[in-house]
Length: 269
Image 1 (spheres, rainbow, N blue to C red):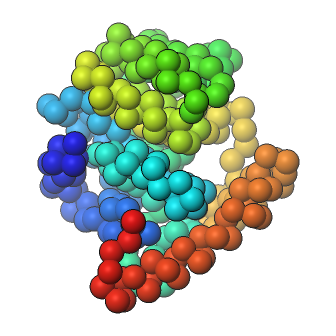
Image 2 (image 1 turned 180 degrees about the vertical axis):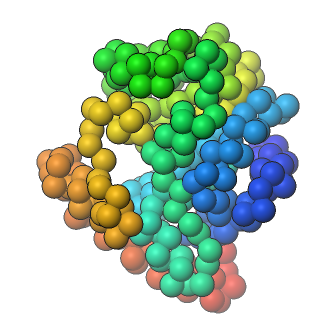
């Protein structure tokens, strides 16, 4: 799997001049801006090696990976790792590293606006019937193939298998996996291991919620000011309080440890 991922990343890097790899907090991110990321994903969607997938780690993901290292393989097996967080971008910048934020929501929106044809099949894992209706209406899509995955996917291997089989039974260039992390990465891994899935999987969390209007995204000025987390906290305090007020600040101690490892020449996890 690692060799396959390396070969794919070489292709991705060759497809864009801004495709260099940046190792940060133990992951090899592809340092790409949003438009280049979407263009490169579309160009390589039907890779000859079969199904591959894109992950977009943010602060919450990185803290979880250090708390549960067993999940790390879900990210290391991905064909493309994009930085979803402007906070991670800033921390990397303080270390002199180039790691532009390429938020998953922006990449997904760009794909629908610039790359997805209205008449091609599109697979969506997760979301609701009303969101699928809204998605089709917004982008004029005629062939959206929807799998209503159940809750509790992380502890339901059978449901993960059914999701991957749905993807195999519904060939498409783009598979949008919208069941939250790490469930969506687990589905992506299962689809890769299935052997019969083609195309690219986008582990994109709430991206379709924003696109279809189910959830309101932070205004542009808040995003540029790295305050999108504050917008989500104020809009969903009960759900987001632990993520942003308890778990989120742990990223600074992880960053300091990672900086120390890089300065002493030791490798992170």
